[in-house]
Length: 159
Image (cartoon, rainbow, N blue to C red):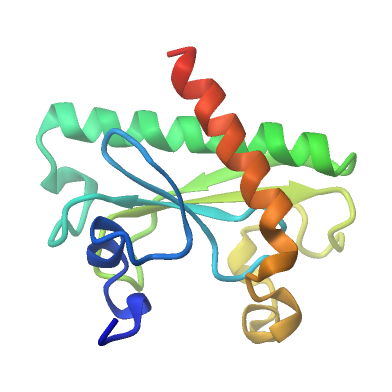
């Protein structure tokens, strides 16, 4: 690989070089987040480079993307509920603030989170959380990856 997959996450996923990919879905790729301070954080990446916003997609593909977002959200919910009794809910977000490609965030939320942030957007977590090596995606997240992938498979076969 001649470059870092992070500079072209969608292209790397299409080429099979993005190590965060959990599953290929109808309109995108379910990936586990680079940071895991909220274990199970996942992202849905659109499968077309150059698509910047939801409205760039034709209606059928747009609905498929939203359906994939729902499927990933439910898979994360099921996996997190199995693995952590403090699981509360998932937050789904399409923001488009920083990365120049369509993607949706799936944030699990837990009862063990600090009261100052548990009811607020994840983006209010201190910047150190996003950079702390303790929360970087790694081998210790393999069981979590497998659980989300299994739930994606179950949800796909029941569709």
